Length: 304
Image (cartoon, rainbow, N blue to C red; front, top):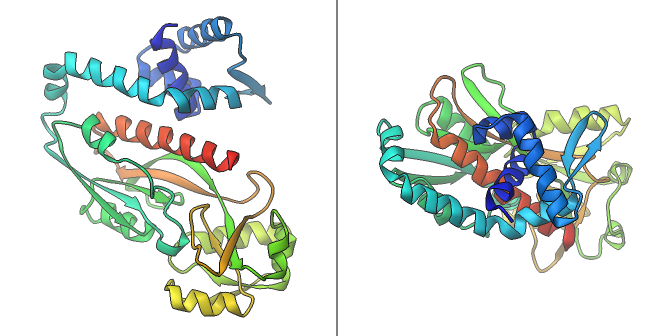
């Protein structure tokens, strides 16, 4: 097996698009497609499938890349070692990078088990500072020049920013263990009609997004202001309230979580953002890292 073909497949899985993946690899889309077909023939597996007019990675492709990501990373690091002088020349205009990565607290830190040292190593010799804050704080940090780039929930509405979608994060619902909805393996959107929902005041864009989705489905939901503090949330849940989280959100001794909606029906979109015109070569490395990490995390969520 040619490890380059694995890397090519990894780029398609992470970028979600043949054109972007080919551009990142400095090869033609036709050459990339040919390499993927060769890998399919060698493995005897379908790695891409047609969905409408689009070609998308199969579950087998996603799992293959999740399991081989360490091998690919070591291959990249070896190439980086061999090309150190060239890389330093490309990066000489950027000595330090400050990256904000969202942490929604009780809303869920999907990166709680992420080993960011792999990203630090990948970006050497740049001095790298990681800041974990809510999405709104990270967004403001990039706009104000405090952060060079950030990974946030929600598509930014600011002309001075460039952004790239990383992945969609499924929404879960937290509730007390004896809640009537707790007997269900998954929560339908219509189930939310009868229960108060904590208004997600710590996620700036989410309320309007949810309202549009729920209005479109003719749902009449009741939202309440609940400060994102554990004692306030506990009291709200005890009276039958629901708390929308990521799959790694608020879980205490007295609470459980269930997925909301059918697959992909309601999700939080994650984006990488940076100021318009301030594009550095390492941004592609950061984007690749988070797409690869999210693929592994989402595969774990699907299999648990």
